[in-house]
Image (cartoon, rainbow, N blue to C red; front, side):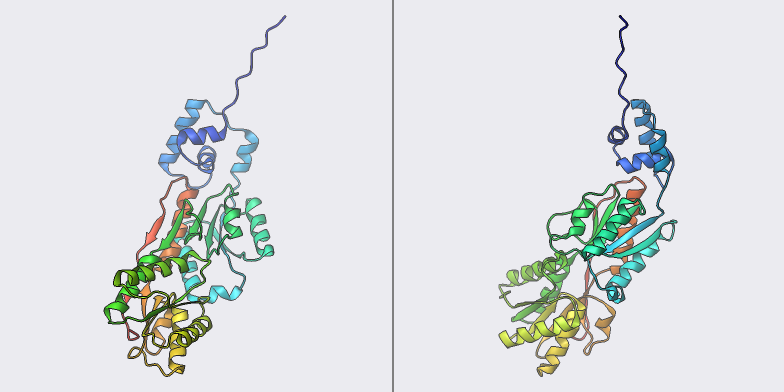
Length: 338
């Protein structure tokens, strides 16, 4: 009776990637000479291929060479007017600048509804995009859960409220808010209040933490808070509530400049002089900070650079590299409101 010799199992692409120390997508691009791959990645994959005696599957190889030629910037928001906001506009400018050296097209997707998320998932699962950037996540955001299921590079602009993703670019929100509060305290203010952003976002929570840290060090009461929605009307309404509850307040830190502009309007309507009666500090250094009366002291974050670094990080991942998360510095800009 003839003896059948067991057929040797063929090594897989996943095994090649593991031996090379790169992602599966990077190994595929290196093997198929598709897309941008760093020299170090290409050499590591070549060594792994030789070591494992890996032979690519012809069908899979044909599919792998079909690059989408696009990346997606998905925002957890439903209002198209969002992109008129200077913050998001500057993010887009920064992302676009980083993509100029490539042939990749930028797709913008609003994904704060079931329809928007379904559309985004169809785009990504049909391989019409080579990478994804996520921005403005709220709470237990479905976009964060979707990102965990994808086999494409994902970079976060800012962090989700719970947990820390592997790749993200963010501003030093906590440190910047601490600078703002320390500045108000150094100006002799002792009855501070804050208008927070939406507390289901990490950016608002981090800015509140930084504010409270500064007040704790100074031994001051940090209980005067009102939550708003990062808009001028929201800041106006929140400041009205603060004035009703705490008429003695002598300083306000607003977690962005739009809300700070609303605070200035509410203070003016209440007959409070800025900065004589109440000092006001915002966050972002958006164009509105130079248009208010008085002009707004604020914490500057490098918004355009944030967009640029998000895109650079995504490009590095697409090229098979392993970038590290990045926190960009913030600084205080002194103007007339404090």
